[in-house]
Structure formats: C-alpha cells, structure tokens
Length: 362
Image (cartoon, rainbow, N blue to C red; front, side):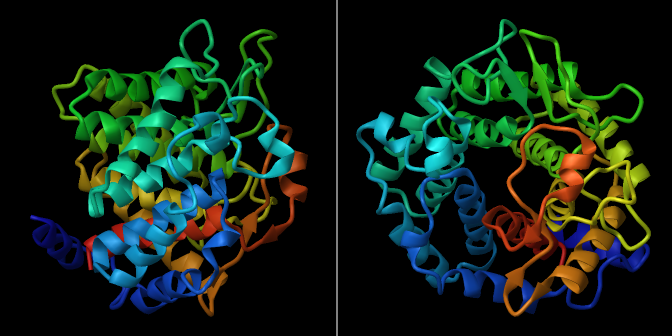
C-alpha cells in the first residue's frame, strides 16, 4: 500500500525529487553516531535527537544506529525516578517535575520496541508514571511545564504525548492514549487561534495571560504530537475526530505561512523573521505522517516536499543541520527573532524524523 501511495504521488505531479536527499539524511545520522554518547544527557533536545536516530534505524535497520542507542541508554538505568528526571541541563534541572526530562523516555521506548529489554521498558514506564501521577496539571487536566509553573507551554505536548500514546498502544492502556489526546484538545482550546489555526506558545491558567505571536517550532511540537498520537489511535476512537479537526486547522495555517522557497519562519506570520530549520523539519515530518495516516489530504504532501528540499539546500552540509534557533522561552515576537541560529540536538532530531517519512515514499 505504501508503495502504491508513493507511486501515485510520483505519477500525479512529480512531487518527489529523484533521490530526496537520502545521502544527506544518512550523513547526518552517521555524523551523530561519531559523537561520544556521554555528550548527550537525559534532556529534551537529546531525547528528540535520539528519537530521530531511532526513526532512521526503523527505516534502514543499520545495526550501527541501534548500537549507538544502546550505549546512550545504558547511561540511564531505571530505578530512582527522582534522580532520572534531574539528569538534564543544570539551569533547568532545578525546576521540579520539568517536562524537558520526559522525551528521552520516548526514545528509549522506541529502543525497547526494536530490541526488547526489561530495563528499557521499565524506564519508559517510570517516566510515564510520573506524568500520570505527579506532574502539575491545570484545573482542566492540562500538563504544566514544571511543578509550580501554572502554565501550558506547547513544548510540553511533545514531551508527553508520544510517550503516553506509544505506551498506551503497546500495552493496550486506553487511559494513556486518552490522556495524550486530551492534552492536545485542552491545549487547542487555550492556545489555537480560531482564525489562523496556528498555536501561541504559552497560556497561564492563573493569570489568563497568553503570549502573542505564533512561534514556529512551537507549532512543530504540536503537529508532531498530533501525528504520533493519531498513529496510535483507530478512527473509531472518540478523540479521533477532534484531533483530526485540530490538525486540519493547523495545516491550513501552515499553508498560509510557508514561504516561496518552502521554509517556515521562526515567527510564522512574520516573513521578516528568519527561516528556521527545526520548525520546517517538524512540519515536513508531521504533514507527511498525517497524509500517510489519511488524516490530511494528499495535497499537503506538496508542502512537505518543498520544505524537505529547502532545508537540505539551505541548512544541511557535511552531516550537520544548521539554521536551528536556540532554546526558547514564551515571549513576544521580537524575542524569537533575535535568538541565535546554529546546530542543535532538537534540530538534528527533527530533520532525521522528517527524513524517515520522506524515505517511506521513496
């Protein structure tokens, strides 16, 4: 079926370049595994990067990638979840219950699915149990960014939803899948703009404050969360239709803000802000996956193709992905525009994830 879909795309408009940059995609993964595993702590950017590497392994079955993942995971033995959740950057590791220490568990869950081991599953379950029982939640049940933040940040969705939905699917635990879906619904209610379909960065449930401007990578976190959660859900699930509606509105907003070269900018509705590689890669991944799942119509694949080509031409060279904005707090548009660009773990991971979906249609 996947081959027929790819053939249809090729015959109905020549959407895909002859090689779709497979050499560049593998070069980035190969460059990554030359880095000592000790360089990457149990933190959000590293988690996204390792998720991307697992997606490359899923497509290639190259044992080098799996071996690297195992060496990385071996640093984090299951046991004391309090210690585990503090294994991050010092500046943010002091925030209790910080969601940035959840995403590495998703990468390790994917590792368990590829090479089942009790310690991998136990670690993923420990982090998920923390999310279920101890993470801060709003009166509606939305996950806070850390204990005491009283804020919904769109980043939080990707830290939690792939882990909860992945475990929910694997263990037939509908409560986890339902929680992942409900997070997206709550966040949409508070942060998705009714007119544009785009998401704002943060909403404070105590003050009612909401940040202005649609931050590019933030919308990427949302789209990837939608794609991974819907992948675990059948169409009869009660949350399927609401999530499909949210995804459709977001995709419409992305169509309206993609530039002529195929990129999206760090402030989506401000073409004077710089084009940003991680957001563009996230959108390529999410759009292609949602088209593959039948959630979005096939016309959205063209947006992803332009994005994939633009990122590769502008920001990928010698196995390194550049053009990625630094770590970002929820502030105004001028703040996002002045953040420095460079090579970041989360940009590498998003790029590898996008490549995995492109590879499905090659």
